[in-house]
Amino acid sequence: MRKHFFTTRNIADYRKFFSRVVSEDKLDGDTEQKFFFACAKRMLGVSDAAFDSPIVGETGIEGLRLDFNMGLRLDVPAGDFRVVISDGDSGQIFFDENISDGRLISAEQFFIRWQVDVFRGGMKIFSHKLNLEGRRVLIAFVHSVLGDTLAMLPFVREFKRHHGCDVKIFLPKFLREFAANLYPDLPQADVTFDNYATYHLVLAGRNSLSVPVEMRNLPMERAGGTLLGISTLPREPTFRPTAPPVTDEPYVCIGVQASTNRKGWLYSRGWDIVVDYLKRLGYRVFCIDKHATETNDGCTITMPAAAEDFTGDYTIMHRANMLAHAEFFVGLSSGLAWLAHAVDCPVVMVCGFSQDWFEFHTPYRVANRLVCNGCLNDVRVNFLGDICPYHHGTGRELECQKKISPRQVINAIEQLIIDRGLTPPVMR
Image 1: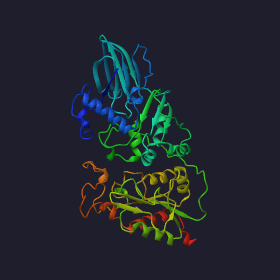
Image 2: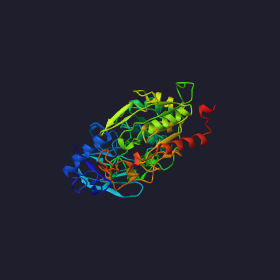
Image 3: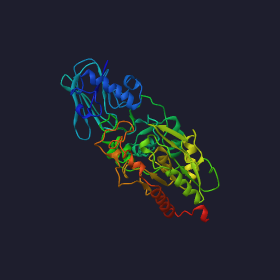
Image 4: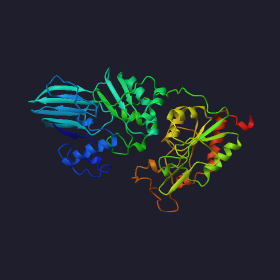
Protein backbone atom coordinates (compact mmCIF):
# COMPACT_ATOMS: atom_id res chain seq x y z
CA MET A 1 0.00 0.00 0.00
CA ARG A 2 1.52 3.29 -1.11
CA LYS A 3 1.62 6.25 1.29
CA HIS A 4 0.44 9.65 0.03
CA PHE A 5 0.86 12.96 1.84
CA PHE A 6 -1.72 15.64 1.23
CA THR A 7 -1.67 19.23 2.48
CA THR A 8 -4.33 21.56 3.81
CA ARG A 9 -2.40 24.46 2.33
CA ASN A 10 -1.35 24.93 -1.24
CA ILE A 11 2.09 23.42 -1.60
CA ALA A 12 3.43 26.84 -2.67
CA ASP A 13 2.86 28.08 0.88
CA TYR A 14 5.65 25.81 2.05
CA ARG A 15 8.21 26.82 -0.54
CA LYS A 16 10.03 29.42 1.54
CA PHE A 17 10.24 27.05 4.47
CA PHE A 18 10.88 23.91 2.45
CA SER A 19 13.06 25.14 -0.39
CA ARG A 20 13.31 21.70 -1.99
CA VAL A 21 9.57 21.47 -2.74
CA VAL A 22 9.15 22.34 -6.41
CA SER A 23 5.78 21.01 -7.52
CA GLU A 24 2.36 22.63 -7.20
CA ASP A 25 0.64 19.25 -7.12
CA LYS A 26 -0.79 18.27 -3.74
CA LEU A 27 -0.51 14.52 -4.03
CA ASP A 28 1.22 12.89 -6.96
CA GLY A 29 4.65 14.53 -7.22
CA ASP A 30 7.28 12.06 -6.06
CA THR A 31 9.69 14.82 -4.95
CA GLU A 32 7.37 16.43 -2.43
CA GLN A 33 6.11 13.06 -1.19
CA LYS A 34 9.63 12.03 -0.20
CA PHE A 35 10.34 15.48 1.15
CA PHE A 36 7.28 15.66 3.40
CA PHE A 37 8.08 12.20 4.73
CA ALA A 38 11.66 13.21 5.59
CA CYS A 39 10.67 16.59 7.04
CA ALA A 40 7.91 15.15 9.19
CA LYS A 41 10.29 12.57 10.65
CA ARG A 42 13.01 15.12 11.36
CA MET A 43 10.81 17.95 12.62
CA LEU A 44 8.48 15.85 14.75
CA GLY A 45 11.07 13.38 15.94
CA VAL A 46 8.88 10.40 15.07
CA SER A 47 9.81 6.93 13.90
CA ASP A 48 8.66 5.11 10.78
CA ALA A 49 5.90 3.60 12.93
CA ALA A 50 4.08 6.94 12.79
CA PHE A 51 3.54 6.34 9.09
CA ASP A 52 3.56 2.54 8.85
CA SER A 53 1.84 1.25 11.99
CA PRO A 54 -1.60 -0.35 11.56
CA ILE A 55 -4.60 1.95 11.62
CA VAL A 56 -7.00 0.52 14.19
CA GLY A 57 -10.02 2.74 13.59
CA GLU A 58 -12.68 0.57 11.94
CA THR A 59 -15.26 2.10 9.63
CA GLY A 60 -17.51 -0.88 8.94
CA ILE A 61 -16.08 -1.13 5.43
CA GLU A 62 -13.48 -3.82 4.83
CA GLY A 63 -10.01 -2.33 4.42
CA LEU A 64 -11.14 1.26 5.07
CA ARG A 65 -9.60 2.42 8.33
CA LEU A 66 -9.20 5.86 9.89
CA ASP A 67 -7.38 7.41 12.82
CA PHE A 68 -5.68 10.69 13.70
CA ASN A 69 -2.37 9.47 15.10
CA MET A 70 -0.14 11.30 12.63
CA GLY A 71 -2.40 14.09 11.58
CA LEU A 72 -5.08 12.27 9.60
CA ARG A 73 -4.34 8.70 8.50
CA LEU A 74 -6.74 6.88 6.19
CA ASP A 75 -6.27 3.45 4.64
CA VAL A 76 -8.22 3.03 1.40
CA PRO A 77 -8.54 -0.49 -0.06
CA ALA A 78 -8.30 -1.34 -3.73
CA GLY A 79 -11.37 -0.26 -5.64
CA ASP A 80 -13.29 2.64 -7.13
CA PHE A 81 -13.06 5.05 -4.19
CA ARG A 82 -13.28 8.82 -4.06
CA VAL A 83 -12.11 10.53 -0.88
CA VAL A 84 -13.06 14.04 0.17
CA ILE A 85 -11.25 15.52 3.18
CA SER A 86 -12.34 18.89 4.49
CA ASP A 87 -12.42 21.18 7.52
CA GLY A 88 -15.36 20.19 9.70
CA ASP A 89 -15.70 23.77 10.92
CA SER A 90 -15.38 25.84 7.75
CA GLY A 91 -16.20 23.29 5.06
CA GLN A 92 -12.99 24.09 3.17
CA ILE A 93 -12.01 21.11 1.02
CA PHE A 94 -8.39 20.00 1.29
CA PHE A 95 -8.47 16.85 -0.80
CA ASP A 96 -10.91 15.49 -3.38
CA GLU A 97 -9.44 12.67 -5.45
CA ASN A 98 -10.01 9.11 -6.58
CA ILE A 99 -7.69 6.73 -4.77
CA SER A 100 -7.20 2.97 -4.64
CA ASP A 101 -5.03 0.85 -2.37
CA GLY A 102 -3.30 3.76 -0.63
CA ARG A 103 -2.74 5.38 2.74
CA LEU A 104 -3.48 9.09 3.00
CA ILE A 105 -1.53 11.06 5.62
CA SER A 106 -1.94 14.77 6.28
CA ALA A 107 1.22 16.83 6.15
CA GLU A 108 -0.13 19.12 8.87
CA GLN A 109 0.06 17.84 12.43
CA PHE A 110 -1.78 20.46 14.51
CA PHE A 111 -5.45 20.32 15.56
CA ILE A 112 -7.91 20.40 12.68
CA ARG A 113 -11.50 19.24 13.00
CA TRP A 114 -11.21 16.82 10.11
CA GLN A 115 -14.23 15.79 8.06
CA VAL A 116 -13.79 12.63 5.97
CA ASP A 117 -16.26 11.47 3.31
CA VAL A 118 -15.71 8.38 1.18
CA PHE A 119 -17.63 7.52 -1.99
CA ARG A 120 -17.77 4.32 -4.02
CA GLY A 121 -19.47 4.21 -7.39
CA GLY A 122 -20.75 7.73 -6.81
CA MET A 123 -22.49 6.85 -3.51
CA LYS A 124 -21.35 8.08 -0.09
CA ILE A 125 -20.48 5.02 1.96
CA PHE A 126 -18.70 6.59 4.92
CA SER A 127 -18.67 9.94 6.73
CA HIS A 128 -16.85 10.94 9.90
CA LYS A 129 -16.07 14.23 11.64
CA LEU A 130 -13.31 14.25 14.24
CA ASN A 131 -14.91 14.03 17.68
CA LEU A 132 -12.60 13.59 20.67
CA GLU A 133 -15.27 13.18 23.36
CA GLY A 134 -14.62 10.03 25.37
CA ARG A 135 -11.72 9.06 23.10
CA ARG A 136 -8.12 8.14 23.96
CA VAL A 137 -5.79 10.96 22.94
CA LEU A 138 -2.02 11.20 23.32
CA ILE A 139 -0.27 14.57 23.31
CA ALA A 140 3.41 14.08 22.64
CA PHE A 141 6.14 16.60 23.42
CA VAL A 142 8.80 15.00 21.29
CA HIS A 143 11.60 17.59 21.47
CA SER A 144 13.71 18.15 24.58
CA VAL A 145 13.22 21.92 24.65
CA LEU A 146 12.45 22.99 28.22
CA GLY A 147 10.97 26.44 27.59
CA ASP A 148 8.79 25.41 24.65
CA THR A 149 7.39 22.44 26.54
CA LEU A 150 6.61 24.41 29.70
CA ALA A 151 4.92 27.08 27.58
CA MET A 152 2.61 24.55 25.90
CA LEU A 153 1.82 22.16 28.77
CA PRO A 154 -0.88 24.27 30.48
CA PHE A 155 -3.12 23.95 27.43
CA VAL A 156 -3.24 20.15 27.65
CA ARG A 157 -5.41 20.25 30.75
CA GLU A 158 -7.72 22.78 29.09
CA PHE A 159 -7.82 20.60 25.95
CA LYS A 160 -8.89 17.63 28.08
CA ARG A 161 -11.63 19.65 29.78
CA HIS A 162 -12.86 21.21 26.53
CA HIS A 163 -13.17 17.96 24.59
CA GLY A 164 -14.00 15.58 27.43
CA CYS A 165 -11.37 13.13 26.21
CA ASP A 166 -9.06 10.66 27.93
CA VAL A 167 -5.71 12.44 27.58
CA LYS A 168 -2.26 11.08 28.27
CA ILE A 169 1.00 12.93 27.66
CA PHE A 170 4.42 11.84 26.46
CA LEU A 171 7.41 13.85 27.68
CA PRO A 172 11.19 13.60 27.49
CA LYS A 173 12.49 11.68 30.50
CA PHE A 174 14.12 14.69 32.12
CA LEU A 175 10.74 16.44 32.47
CA ARG A 176 8.50 13.63 33.65
CA GLU A 177 8.90 13.98 37.42
CA PHE A 178 8.41 17.74 37.30
CA ALA A 179 5.36 17.50 35.03
CA ALA A 180 3.79 14.90 37.33
CA ASN A 181 4.12 17.40 40.18
CA LEU A 182 2.48 20.21 38.19
CA TYR A 183 -0.15 18.07 36.47
CA PRO A 184 -0.99 15.00 38.59
CA ASP A 185 -4.25 14.69 36.65
CA LEU A 186 -2.44 14.10 33.34
CA PRO A 187 -1.17 10.50 33.14
CA GLN A 188 2.04 9.93 31.22
CA ALA A 189 2.54 7.25 28.59
CA ASP A 190 4.87 6.18 25.82
CA VAL A 191 4.07 6.99 22.21
CA THR A 192 1.85 4.37 20.61
CA PHE A 193 -0.36 4.53 17.56
CA ASP A 194 -3.46 2.75 18.83
CA ASN A 195 -5.18 5.91 20.08
CA TYR A 196 -7.99 7.77 18.40
CA ALA A 197 -5.69 10.78 17.99
CA THR A 198 -2.11 11.80 18.71
CA TYR A 199 -0.78 15.36 18.56
CA HIS A 200 2.97 15.85 18.21
CA LEU A 201 3.57 19.35 19.58
CA VAL A 202 6.57 21.21 18.18
CA LEU A 203 7.14 24.95 17.91
CA ALA A 204 8.78 25.83 14.62
CA GLY A 205 9.05 28.70 12.17
CA ARG A 206 6.58 29.93 9.64
CA ASN A 207 4.89 27.66 7.12
CA SER A 208 5.85 24.57 9.09
CA LEU A 209 4.02 21.25 9.18
CA SER A 210 3.68 21.56 12.94
CA VAL A 211 2.14 25.04 13.27
CA PRO A 212 -0.85 26.76 11.66
CA VAL A 213 0.41 30.35 11.91
CA GLU A 214 3.61 32.40 11.86
CA MET A 215 4.75 31.60 15.38
CA ARG A 216 6.97 34.67 15.64
CA ASN A 217 3.79 36.76 15.67
CA LEU A 218 2.35 34.82 18.59
CA PRO A 219 3.23 34.97 22.31
CA MET A 220 4.75 31.68 23.41
CA GLU A 221 2.18 31.50 26.20
CA ARG A 222 -0.52 31.17 23.51
CA ALA A 223 1.33 28.73 21.27
CA GLY A 224 0.02 25.55 22.87
CA GLY A 225 -3.54 26.76 22.48
CA THR A 226 -2.96 27.57 18.82
CA LEU A 227 -1.57 24.10 18.10
CA LEU A 228 -4.39 22.38 20.01
CA GLY A 229 -7.22 24.61 18.82
CA ILE A 230 -7.90 26.05 22.29
CA SER A 231 -8.61 29.76 22.71
CA THR A 232 -9.34 29.72 26.46
CA LEU A 233 -6.39 30.72 28.61
CA PRO A 234 -5.64 27.92 31.08
CA ARG A 235 -5.16 28.46 34.78
CA GLU A 236 -1.61 28.26 36.02
CA PRO A 237 -0.63 25.01 37.77
CA THR A 238 0.65 24.94 41.34
CA PHE A 239 4.08 23.55 42.09
CA ARG A 240 4.54 21.73 45.39
CA PRO A 241 8.21 21.69 46.48
CA THR A 242 9.55 18.26 47.30
CA ALA A 243 12.69 19.36 49.13
CA PRO A 244 13.58 22.04 51.69
CA PRO A 245 15.71 25.07 50.77
CA VAL A 246 19.39 24.35 50.17
CA THR A 247 20.17 26.95 52.85
CA ASP A 248 18.33 28.88 55.55
CA GLU A 249 19.89 32.11 54.26
CA PRO A 250 18.07 34.24 51.66
CA TYR A 251 19.34 33.57 48.17
CA VAL A 252 18.85 34.52 44.53
CA CYS A 253 19.33 32.21 41.55
CA ILE A 254 20.90 33.34 38.29
CA GLY A 255 21.27 31.72 34.87
CA VAL A 256 23.83 33.21 32.50
CA GLN A 257 23.80 30.56 29.74
CA ALA A 258 21.26 30.11 26.96
CA SER A 259 20.83 27.88 23.94
CA THR A 260 22.47 30.40 21.57
CA ASN A 261 24.79 33.39 21.91
CA ARG A 262 22.04 35.66 20.65
CA LYS A 263 20.19 34.97 23.90
CA GLY A 264 23.16 35.75 26.16
CA TRP A 265 23.64 39.04 27.99
CA LEU A 266 26.80 40.28 26.29
CA TYR A 267 27.55 43.51 28.20
CA SER A 268 31.18 43.28 29.31
CA ARG A 269 31.31 42.22 32.99
CA GLY A 270 27.57 42.81 33.26
CA TRP A 271 26.92 39.69 35.29
CA ASP A 272 29.82 40.41 37.63
CA ILE A 273 28.42 43.87 38.38
CA VAL A 274 24.93 42.53 39.10
CA VAL A 275 26.21 39.71 41.30
CA ASP A 276 28.33 42.17 43.30
CA TYR A 277 25.21 44.32 43.78
CA LEU A 278 23.14 41.36 44.98
CA LYS A 279 25.84 40.33 47.43
CA ARG A 280 26.01 43.87 48.82
CA LEU A 281 22.30 43.47 49.56
CA GLY A 282 23.21 40.40 51.61
CA TYR A 283 21.94 37.73 49.24
CA ARG A 284 23.75 34.55 48.46
CA VAL A 285 23.84 34.18 44.67
CA PHE A 286 23.60 30.70 43.16
CA CYS A 287 24.38 30.09 39.50
CA ILE A 288 22.21 27.15 38.41
CA ASP A 289 23.21 26.71 34.77
CA LYS A 290 24.10 23.24 33.55
CA HIS A 291 27.61 24.41 32.59
CA ALA A 292 29.80 27.01 34.27
CA THR A 293 31.39 27.89 30.92
CA GLU A 294 30.05 27.55 27.39
CA THR A 295 31.63 28.49 24.07
CA ASN A 296 30.03 28.69 20.65
CA ASP A 297 30.61 30.85 17.59
CA GLY A 298 33.87 31.97 19.17
CA CYS A 299 32.06 33.52 22.14
CA THR A 300 32.66 32.23 25.66
CA ILE A 301 30.25 32.94 28.51
CA THR A 302 31.40 32.08 32.02
CA MET A 303 29.67 32.01 35.37
CA PRO A 304 30.39 35.18 37.40
CA ALA A 305 33.34 34.55 39.69
CA ALA A 306 31.54 35.87 42.79
CA ALA A 307 28.50 33.61 42.31
CA GLU A 308 28.32 30.28 44.11
CA ASP A 309 28.69 27.36 41.75
CA PHE A 310 25.54 25.25 41.61
CA THR A 311 26.13 24.33 37.98
CA GLY A 312 26.02 20.70 36.94
CA ASP A 313 23.77 18.05 35.52
CA TYR A 314 21.07 18.27 38.16
CA THR A 315 17.50 17.11 37.62
CA ILE A 316 14.80 19.56 36.63
CA MET A 317 13.04 18.81 39.93
CA HIS A 318 16.19 19.79 41.83
CA ARG A 319 16.31 23.08 39.93
CA ALA A 320 12.58 23.63 40.45
CA ASN A 321 12.93 23.20 44.20
CA MET A 322 15.85 25.64 44.31
CA LEU A 323 13.85 28.22 42.35
CA ALA A 324 10.69 27.72 44.40
CA HIS A 325 12.59 28.69 47.56
CA ALA A 326 14.59 31.54 45.96
CA GLU A 327 13.56 35.16 46.46
CA PHE A 328 13.82 35.70 42.71
CA PHE A 329 15.63 34.64 39.55
CA VAL A 330 17.76 36.78 37.24
CA GLY A 331 18.32 35.28 33.82
CA LEU A 332 17.71 35.29 30.09
CA SER A 333 15.04 34.17 27.68
CA SER A 334 15.80 30.55 28.45
CA GLY A 335 14.39 27.32 29.77
CA LEU A 336 15.44 28.23 33.31
CA ALA A 337 13.36 31.41 33.12
CA TRP A 338 10.33 29.35 32.08
CA LEU A 339 11.05 26.92 34.91
CA ALA A 340 11.20 29.77 37.42
CA HIS A 341 7.93 31.13 36.07
CA ALA A 342 6.32 27.68 36.39
CA VAL A 343 7.17 27.47 40.11
CA ASP A 344 6.04 31.07 40.75
CA CYS A 345 9.54 32.45 41.30
CA PRO A 346 9.70 36.14 40.23
CA VAL A 347 11.82 36.56 37.10
CA VAL A 348 14.07 39.40 35.98
CA MET A 349 14.54 38.62 32.28
CA VAL A 350 17.45 40.24 30.42
CA CYS A 351 16.50 40.02 26.76
CA GLY A 352 16.56 42.38 23.79
CA PHE A 353 16.46 40.03 20.81
CA SER A 354 12.71 39.36 21.17
CA GLN A 355 9.77 41.63 21.84
CA ASP A 356 8.34 42.11 25.32
CA TRP A 357 5.15 40.17 24.53
CA PHE A 358 6.85 37.05 23.18
CA GLU A 359 7.82 35.17 26.35
CA PHE A 360 5.66 34.98 29.48
CA HIS A 361 4.74 38.30 31.07
CA THR A 362 7.08 39.64 33.70
CA PRO A 363 7.09 43.27 34.88
CA TYR A 364 10.86 42.93 35.18
CA ARG A 365 11.78 42.51 31.55
CA VAL A 366 15.02 44.36 30.74
CA ALA A 367 15.84 45.49 27.18
CA ASN A 368 17.35 48.46 25.40
CA ARG A 369 14.79 49.50 22.80
CA LEU A 370 16.96 52.42 21.64
CA VAL A 371 19.20 50.12 19.61
CA CYS A 372 18.41 47.44 17.02
CA ASN A 373 16.23 44.91 18.83
CA GLY A 374 13.46 42.34 18.57
CA CYS A 375 14.68 40.60 15.42
CA LEU A 376 13.39 37.22 16.61
CA ASN A 377 9.85 38.48 16.01
CA ASP A 378 10.67 40.22 12.74
CA VAL A 379 8.94 38.12 10.08
CA ARG A 380 11.15 39.65 7.38
CA VAL A 381 14.13 37.79 8.79
CA ASN A 382 15.21 34.30 7.76
CA PHE A 383 17.57 33.25 10.53
CA LEU A 384 20.67 31.27 9.70
CA GLY A 385 21.90 29.67 12.88
CA ASP A 386 22.94 32.23 15.47
CA ILE A 387 23.78 35.04 13.03
CA CYS A 388 22.74 38.60 13.84
CA PRO A 389 20.49 39.19 10.80
CA TYR A 390 20.95 42.94 10.36
CA HIS A 391 24.46 43.69 11.64
CA HIS A 392 26.48 40.49 11.35
CA GLY A 393 30.15 41.26 10.86
CA THR A 394 29.82 44.92 11.88
CA GLY A 395 30.44 46.86 15.08
CA ARG A 396 26.71 46.72 15.79
CA GLU A 397 26.46 42.93 15.79
CA LEU A 398 24.19 41.70 18.60
CA GLU A 399 23.89 45.20 20.03
CA CYS A 400 20.43 44.18 21.34
CA GLN A 401 22.21 42.02 23.92
CA LYS A 402 25.42 44.04 24.31
CA LYS A 403 23.84 47.41 25.13
CA ILE A 404 21.61 46.38 28.01
CA SER A 405 23.40 48.05 30.90
CA PRO A 406 23.88 46.68 34.43
CA ARG A 407 22.10 49.79 35.69
CA GLN A 408 18.96 48.71 33.81
CA VAL A 409 19.10 45.24 35.35
CA ILE A 410 19.68 46.65 38.83
CA ASN A 411 16.74 49.03 38.38
CA ALA A 412 14.50 46.07 37.57
CA ILE A 413 15.74 44.18 40.64
CA GLU A 414 15.09 47.20 42.85
CA GLN A 415 11.55 47.49 41.48
CA LEU A 416 10.94 43.80 42.07
CA ILE A 417 12.09 44.12 45.68
CA ILE A 418 9.66 47.01 46.20
CA ASP A 419 6.74 45.34 44.41
CA ARG A 420 7.13 42.03 46.25
CA GLY A 421 7.63 43.66 49.64
CA LEU A 422 11.03 42.02 50.09
CA THR A 423 13.55 43.16 52.65
CA PRO A 424 17.14 42.62 51.52
CA PRO A 425 19.11 40.59 54.09
CA VAL A 426 21.50 43.47 54.79
CA MET A 427 18.51 45.47 56.12
CA ARG A 428 17.03 42.71 58.29
